[in-house]
Length: 298
Length: 316
Image (cartoon, rainbow over all chains, first blue to last red; front, side, top):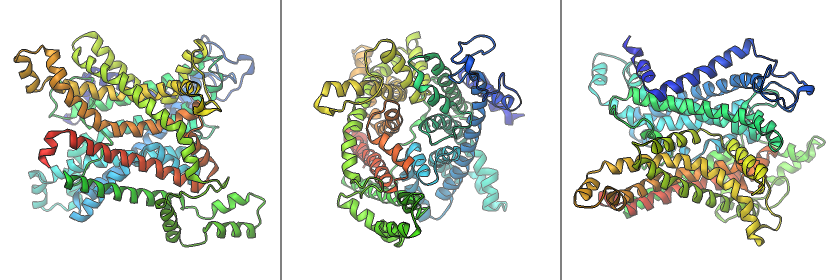
């Protein structure tokens, strides 16, 4: 019961509620699109090119007569895939680096901290370029570059948290009662750093959605045969002078999704962090949001 | 202070070293591919082997790394595998577009975000302040490509004020044309980056408003706004400096995408083309310069922050 209390608190924050609804809609669209879309998103219908929004094409059609709503629904699948994939990679890398940087011998710990500080200077797009130069573009590139980029961020925020919790009494008690370090990590350390961690995760998913769009646009993301919001933007780019409306939909969809994930992240912070006062300005950027400012190891 | 500067300098050097190692060895995961690529599909195995030897790809990786890094330290970034031109010279040439674009973007971000951020904090209890904050939150979620496209639709297609793409062949010898063609790209990056900056300025200002010394100053006879202006804003300025490093990284990333959209012949567009063409020598040079730049800016920002903030100076 009390394990889900944070969800209820999240729902009570209006921006969090809005974010949750947006994320849920995208998820549902992605799942539904596996079985059903209003039209086949690959169906080319030259007679109906550049159709205006109306019936039966609710958002109109693109330059090949494809139904835009169906394309966006199918594209949601790619977005969810990339966001979840990047989230998983970021989690694994983040926990691994944070644990290495907090729980090991002093010299390992401090080298890891320096390494984290260096990696932070690599923008996600630069990592993506590096990976694409070797293996060529793919959705994997997006997942790995955002995963690495944000994994490092998560490690950086989680590491000091982990060190703080490490010296707390319940961890000591765990040690005294015979838990192995791994058991202690799983039962006492990770649950206690989870809030910091989950917040970063939802931001990293927002970045993943933006990165998918940007990299697919540059030609290093989704293969051209895949439905993707970024590719749709690249597709309609040449016609923005003639058919401006077709550019609006994919961009609006991406913006809403990213906004939703960001708001969920911000609200999660507020809902899980007992040290934040309730009267906090709901629209202020979260403290952890200063993400790339290098930390000097003393 | 000296001790801090030296520690920070050491960290910068370690950072540059690690960055160069990461870039070099990641790009060499697939050795030999480059020679095959230059020889083309028609190339015989002998030709491929000859190219490999000429480029030194047959030697141990460590040797290649030291040769590369030795060159970099002497200011030689190597020559392109595809067109044989000097990587350094091409970077300098392309920087004539990217550096002004970056500076203009930064300027626009500052001009747009700082006053609005302060204003939205001062007016936080009124509709305007909240509206500005919601606007910034939304703008920060906009993909930079899309922002560019929307601006093109409005200012290039509908109003016809600014060119939709391209950079004048005459370059900076026709400064007005050059600036005109960079204006829309710079506004795009400036707004998207500025949205994030605005949120920081707003939150820093709100913190400043709540500080004791601002309240004291107000109690001693200044109006609330005067107190904030004289005693609060210097602190806001400091926190802006700390996020500048982040902003520079964001602008570089924005430039890569935006130069593509506006077909500007800058470093970002060159990088995209070279990654697509697998010109590994050029890509490693470009990546090293870009990450090195971000690391150095981070270093300078930390030093400046230390010098300007008396509290940190005393703590050192």
